[in-house]
Length: 257
Image 1 (cartoon, rainbow, N blue to C red):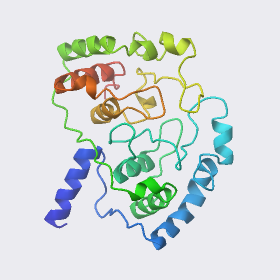
Image 2 (cartoon, rainbow, N blue to C red; image 1 turned 120 degrees about the horizontal axis):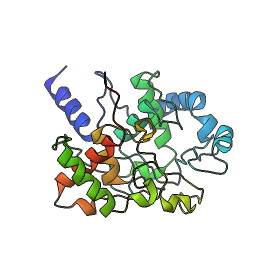
Image 3 (cartoon, one colour; image 1 turned 180 degrees about the vertical axis):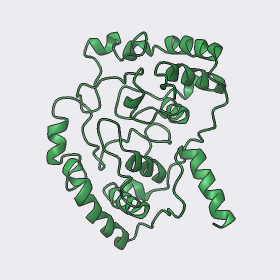
Image 4 (spheres, rainbow, N blue to C red; image 1 turned 30 degrees about the vertical axis):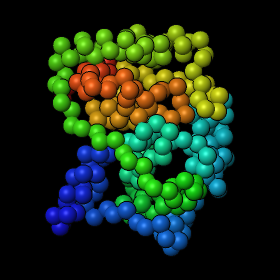
């Protein structure tokens, strides 16, 4: 691999939190690329996201008729899983990460598609929304964790958790049973009831559960849900982000090997 390409791969990994396979190159948005993506979309995505990408596929209506989440409307809605500021479109690599990993309990991973096929279907998905033709958004630089998960850090993280009122939705101990949720007040942008993540079950973290995934979620929020961006709360206090990340991960310790 050329030095330039290797540097690009490293940069993508640092920014997005997912290492792209060697040789995976983002395709252009030409009609031929989109046409190949359309065939993949019709085979793998249409059943939930619909013919025109409006989230109205036949399976999607069955899955999310009364409660959130419903399949993403690529045409008019915001995107939850991004490394970009709240309210902005995701980067191409955000879309690649979601297609590759899937969303636990909601959308299967599509790592069985080749890297090129994943990029092609992303090119087609982007054709549903003309806003993707504008200047690409600038993603957040997601740093390497800088604070070890010590007892002191976890204690500080819990104090931040309570200070920000996270227990209102996620519960005193992170089990997803906070009073706001119990009162039925949590709704998504379609006014469908939505449940907060059970932070004691790492497998349920829809935006990923490694430290950098959680950092990204805290700093960008999940558009279309009650989960806001906390980037303004952490201005000038980068260490506090990692204290909170350490606390959240302490609620769902991985089993010892």
